[in-house]
Image (tube, rainbow, N blue to C red; front, side, top):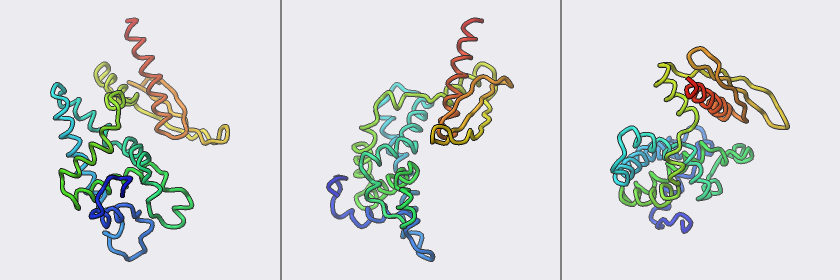
Length: 224
């Protein structure tokens, strides 16, 4: 509790927030795991983040606020905060899931953080939950991370504006290369293949393909 800077009164709900569904026996009540708290915490996080952005960015329009909120509440960002708080060390999982190191999965870490936010909200109220989110999560995400548009988003916006079409991705499993599984993705815009990329998962492969396509399209537009 000292690590999380939370009062002892929050302990019962915090403990439930760290119980993964895999650790709950069949037939147990839904509230015995952190899933219901995760559901609530998602909404609390969204409201706190929206309020924070609206207060701190008076010059941003609705589109910019929405993009930044999407980044701040993304599973990637939440998992980073959960790792910094070492929530994986505290998670309770079934023996098989623990042996498979499931506590390191970004989705499980992100869910645990959302459940923890709900635990603070339930035990201490909204103001305390907002303070916890701002102190432990929002304050640690740099401006460059919030404002950054990933390549897929940037390509989609460019294509919608310039060719009134959305990118189409074709993914394939490249098999094991250099002791690691690799994926390949090809992206087409308006029926023309514009980029290819590879990575350890489909998302990273698509991002690499989108980055190549975006660079190619921008260079072509500059030459016209």
